[in-house]
Amino acid sequence: MSDTAVRVADATGNWVDTLAPAWSRPYLRLARFDRPIGSWLLLMPCWWSAALAAGISGSLAMLPAWIGLYFVGAFVMRGAGCTWNDITDRDLDAKVERTRSRPIPAGQVGVKQALAFLVAQALIGLAVLLQFNRFAILTGIASLLIVAIYPFMKRVTWWPQVVLGLAFSWGALMGFAVAFGRLDATALLLYAGSISWVIAYDTIYAHQDAEDDALIGIKSTARLFAERTHLALVIFYSLAVVLIGAAFVTAHVHVAAWLGLAGFAAHLGWQIQRLDTADPALCLRLFKSNRYAGLLLFAGLLADAVLRAT
Image (cartoon, rainbow, N blue to C red; front, side):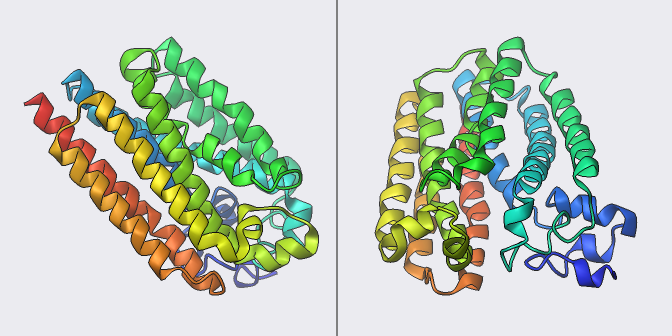
């Protein structure tokens, strides 16, 4: 079977398809390096918490190193999570138009090979985690239980996006665990705000597969909210802004951080205004645009940290 024939349906024309060695392509696709948006979305709460913690401490000494380590950790652990997801969902993926071309259902990678690749990625993630203090290491390890159970949630609950939010927002805790060796109200509020953000943006994403999911009995908030999706997004995006704002209040941030939050909120409002759940391509574009929303918030936090340290 040609490489062109087994390219992932919703990730064509990327660097993996055009530049990566042929032998590596199935594994890079398995880890979603052809679709890095998920890694960016996993990274955003890590960077938020790192910058916010640096601002609270008044020191930028370790912030560049934290930013770099979180970048590597987010990309390899998202790859590991996607590999695990594809192993557990291989039979379901074969029944969905958008996912049947993924490496395992397409026959590019066997389950044993995928498991070995999963272990290799997890070991890189562990190497990153071991650069931090003991509390941060234990905090990071604790997230693995949520990652492990997430793929099964769409079979048993209409709210799998909540579990994804718990996993994808874990980085909001890590910045404080690394910087202070503890978790306080600011960290927990930032975590809760990020969870609300994830629930909303993954609902947008899930609308791409709503019809196929209904046929094979997969649950999601997209199917649960259906025609009320716009209202649900207003609720969850608003809750994200309010909770993150509450974290800012407890952290005594300055105007730069608030400007970042304002930009973040404006972007979320734009998504709601633009959304048409009957247009899968638009749903994907709006979902991907959350990287820019997250970067707006990070820019404000980074500027706040710099100003407070000088």
